[in-house]
Image 1 (spheres, rainbow, N blue to C red):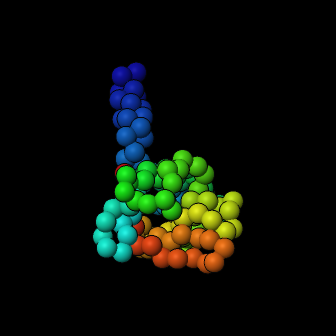
Image 2: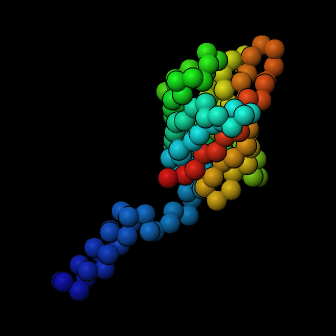
Length: 138
């Protein structure tokens, strides 16, 4: 009985620690810590991205933005649903997918658990690049 129990415990422990890969798991899904800077390199906001489900090229989850004290009025603290669209290495993360004429989004590349690129504000007048961002998978 004991010889059978040891391999079973090993499989349970490895599976719990994340050492067993999931063949159907998307490399995009997971928790990310992000930071965004303006064109001068000053940090504007930090936060997290938690992508929990994916259908084809569209991942959905929860995103949290924490505004820096001197970031200005255009940036608001936020804890809401978000979505990411990925095509090849290109990625777009939309922090307000239900709004067509307001909100923030990222455009960039995804590689090796890291998103990098530019962040933009969306308005009725169009999309305005505001600086750079990076988000690193935990």
